[in-house]
Image (cartoon, rainbow, N blue to C red; front, side, top):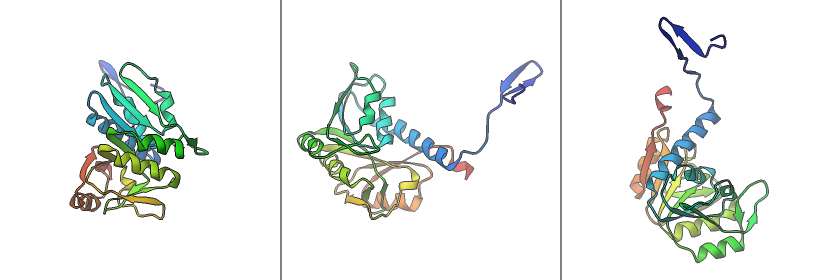
Length: 212
């Protein structure tokens, strides 16, 4: 009570909810957590999935539950998820990029070139409103292209700050319709343009929009 965390009243007490607005970085982290949780809803039992070097895409593994899933990834962060009867992980191998947990190079490319998956869950630096995805790690671009090419269905996971983004980074144009999962702070005009392009757009509720 002295720290202002409990409000006492006649007959009891209750916790005081901290309504302090989130900072920009906290807000983005919240959006990415919600996107990962929402994306996990598209997993089906016995799916084989690709996950690239994206931390948001990898966070899907927190929400698998009791579904049996095989994960193929170049994301070294997967090591914190122990394999089990329901979660099996195949790491592509390859050269680890300095300062990251992302694996790239011929070893990873060779494996992915010969591998197929039911779904790919991929995060990118951005996506333009005409369906061009941007990757700020050029060495990973070929890996992303193979994951897109060798899956039945793909899901692009990007928060609102990455929607409608144009950059000089390595990029590739999505050559078939897929699904974009973003948050409800994403620009509506960009979402509409992507829908016109043929993409399915899911805007995950964050409860942040009402505070804007």
